[in-house]
Length: 220
Image 1 (cartoon, rainbow, N blue to C red):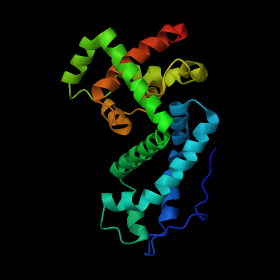
Image 2 (cartoon, rainbow, N blue to C red):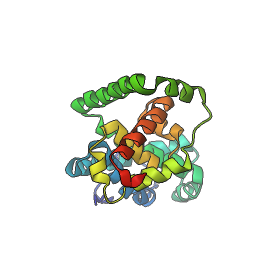
Image 3 (cartoon, rainbow, N blue to C red):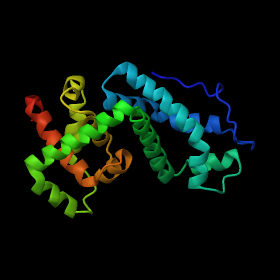
């Protein structure tokens, strides 16, 4: 697993006594493994996933102070940060922020940007061809933010021993959506993290579910 030595990086913008690097490592380390899995879900390549993971950690390390102060501008000491991260709301926003950095790091590459947009176009055409009425219904139900329990369980099961083979059936966008669904994220959260409409998330998950089941009779 990718490691991050916080003694190797020294912030050039902080003159306070707060050790931002230490706090970043302390509060982000429990998410590193999940971040690496998310990297793999995006690129489907172990080496590239590790590179994305390391770059994402460095980017988030450098931006950690800004994230914290944007969330609470009253932070003045190390104890304030520790107290802040005792809250569940900051934990929720922090993990989402880390995942957004991973996604943005992945699509920073120009060729990847083209591929990501192509995946979006393919999804859109498939959506129009197969279930446009379902998508209209999904978009009209703006308060339907949570995945159904059976869908969550399926996506978790789909990422078990044979998940690598199943991932090969999907494009980058579909893989990332399935991963986040298996991580118990709601439609609304997935939409925010990936920067795509919630209706697209819902429709893509529905069609991906059908595709995975069609190639995995054991998951019926």
